[in-house]
Length: 277
Image 1 (tube, rainbow, N blue to C red):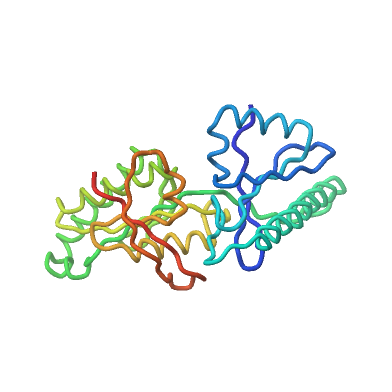
Image 2: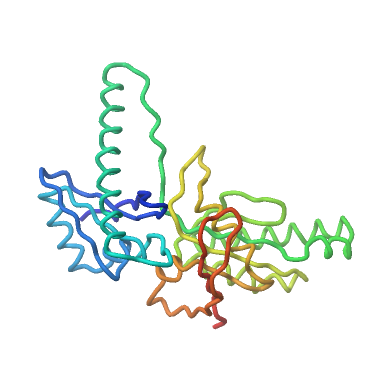
């Protein structure tokens, strides 16, 4: 059985279009699963077997056109836009194969290989303390350092418990990587535990494709995740629409917080607060 294929992104008309490529048969086949996202296709045994059979005889490309699944959701969607998305994916996909083939050939010849950036689809969790400067002034340096160390230790315990990974820390905030449902569960625990230390935490969760650079995650998705966290109120966990769609059926409830303009990120982004249990 095939593993879940990596999700890649093509850029068409300023819109990020998600796609997957599997198989290496002589014929090209494009499959557009309307009203579903690419990751969920592989969770349905019958559909998974169907896709594996197709990939055994073809080079199968799965596409989420704009407005669907893991792709961007512009304000307006048209049939022409969907066709542009499919063309953008097909144009990029052979180019990627050519780059890989050229790099392999160069290696055989003893030439320096070309750099092909690695990327990965990841769910990102950002946490941040609210009002930390005021709280530090109240406690004094030594007491504040003790509280901060206890908070950091608690965050790391929760991240480990939910099988996440701490990617980076900045000041009193954390940047972590998870699966979507586990990221939300971890964020809720971190937010709920903070008042015991006299602290308030806000958190943001976003899923997107990130580039790997020296074991770090970088790219626009990282910026979006940080901006989502910045929009959260004290004690609140905000998620992007992508995350909400990915955890559909998990039993989690959300409250619509409307569209927000995220600093440095094009377009408007609809955000959702994780509802209390």
